[in-house]
Image (tube, rainbow, N blue to C red):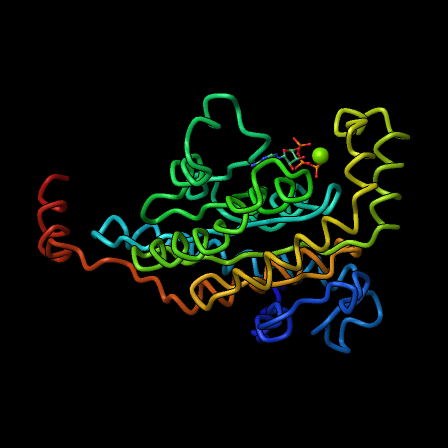
Length: 290
Ligand code: ATP
Ligand code: MG
């Protein structure tokens, strides 16, 4: 029998603190909000819940899409950020994957191309935003422009410093134009990253995901964390809140993100549009054709 998941208010538990953020204070193995009923076999419990929440996500997405067909302009964006091996791809597959691919726009951001670099950093981001009725998923995002760019000093300090406010203005402007933004940092430990990198190397079917340059980034772990802490502190508005999801346990990560999506989408109450025809009249006409 299909189970009916409970709404839990995970947004309260996982919202990045306002003011200074200390990632070291958030345990990547922790499982905030996991109920006692999950204790026997948390992994299977969480997987079953994700499937059930997925049914709700699917329906909400369809309603958002239908709403746009009636002229609605609302749209949704899930931003996923993480250190390498943080589980962004897994989250896209397991959580976003519960929804109809036609209603999704998934975009991964790598290092900008030469032609992208000729434009302001938000240029390629604007072009990738979901249109009305769609749910966008960003696998990395404009935050790379204050993360890797900060760690490697890719732009002058004053340019970098201005970006936090630029991002806030951009997100507020998008929110006014009907975009609901949910930003999630998947928070893994340094040890977990080592394990995942090792398993990429050990498994011939995963080696393609490994990049020798990943080790140079790993060596800058503390700098990355400092850059994340600044980004989370500076760009955590109610228009576009940040959530930190402990992500060493993949099943918890998926369950937590599924809940965040569900709560946020459900609050939007997307509605099917009223038909601009009379269904009984149409039925009568249809009957006349048979
Ligand atoms: P995985 O976590 O599975 O390794 P990934 O997201 O790292 O996947 P890759 O194609 O390996 O995917 O890496 C994308 C790279 O592009 C990352 O190192 C990221 O920091 C970099 N990148 C993304 N946006 C920018 C940017 N604006 N400026 C510079 N580098 C960027
Ligand atoms: Mg990578």
